[in-house]
Image 1: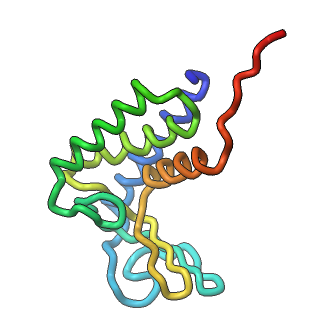
Image 2 (image 1 turned 45 degrees about the vertical axis):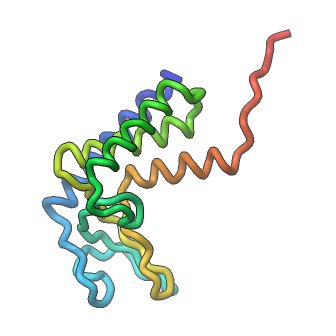
Amino acid sequence: MFKWAWLFVFLLGLDITTKLIAIHWVPPLDFGPYPFGGVPLFSLGGITCSFNYVVNSGAAWGFFIGHAGLLFAVRMCIIAALVFFVPKRFPIWLVVTGAIGNVLDYCLYGHVIDFIHFTFWGYSFPIFNVADSCITIGILTLLLLPKQKKVQAL
């Protein structure tokens, strides 16, 4: 798995860098028309994407706001469990990388920085970041792809 370490370091660095850019140069979310006060990326066939700075002191989709200490402890336990007790597979390391990125936000800012904003035909999808993408892709990969069987040498 160490052959993939550079990828996880890159993704964590990308997460940190994009959040710093969002903090300094992306306008906060405004509930007006596209691009919602932020930086427009595209609008095509009812789907829009923009960068809009928001902070999230809860979990995904703003759940558990006001329970930052508890969420921090739960996140740290999940990271530890994944690192020490779950078989090391590529998707697990994606989840760990994303979780570390969001835990770093909590340690540095007291909340998570989100900035990627999609709307689908008027429905505003929850705003997310690179770390959230790593977590989502890792979990979807675990759910959708069969576990790889080890091939034994003849």
